[in-house]
Image (tube, rainbow, N blue to C red; front, side):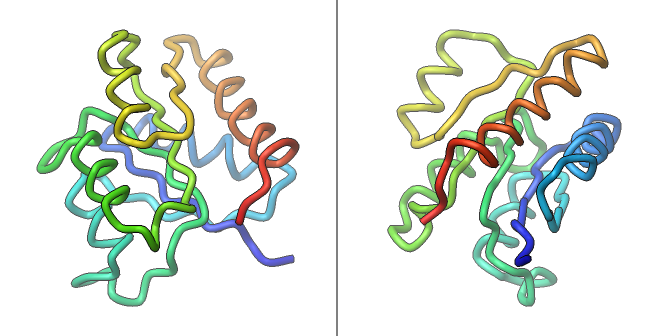
Length: 140
């Protein structure tokens, strides 16, 4: 089975570990790359610098509040390139602001999930994202 390549863009090491752990304990065959900021995310997607050999992701899980370059800017930059339109982008962030939600969809996000505070709810949110992509979504 060909693995689904997931790019996780998360600056909080604790959240990144929780997300990675939850994704690794799913029924999907995943290959997960983690980058800590928006600039590294774009370098990974566009295969620049130390990410020149990176595989193009099949799914991007993107935090909004990132150092160096924010999630909104990453989302907007990726969506400006027609060759990348087919990559689903899930916003997974602590913000439940209506402005952030509408802005993310306006910029081209496929899904917006607010990070729960409680560990069990956090893990359940990751499982729900995984279940959606495994059970409902059909990649191009």
